Image 1 (cartoon, rainbow, N blue to C red):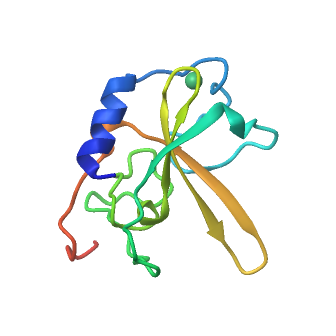
Image 2: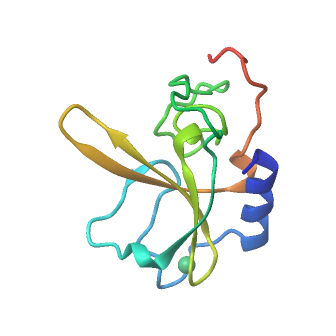
Length: 130
Ligand SMILES: [Zn+2]
């Protein structure tokens, strides 16, 4: 899925607080998946992973001085962690989310972030992160 497709998806679903099925997901920035959340409320609709890229970059895209946890951090397909995300939608209201799993030394952390269209950017590959 491209940045343009992701923007279209977010615009089509509208912005909002969601519905009873997804209201537990408050994740303007990256958050851990809430314990006990029923994942069957979400449906996978695509991926941002590049086909055949087994080792996507760990570089992040933050031209405005945001950091990885910022609510306002750009959603930049091709950059970490978006380059390992799948795209999901709520089964109830179609609110879109990104999900990936962070692998630490001795733990894994399932992370989720709501997609807001105005944050999706498409910097050209190779643009130096700041
Ligand atoms: Zn919903």
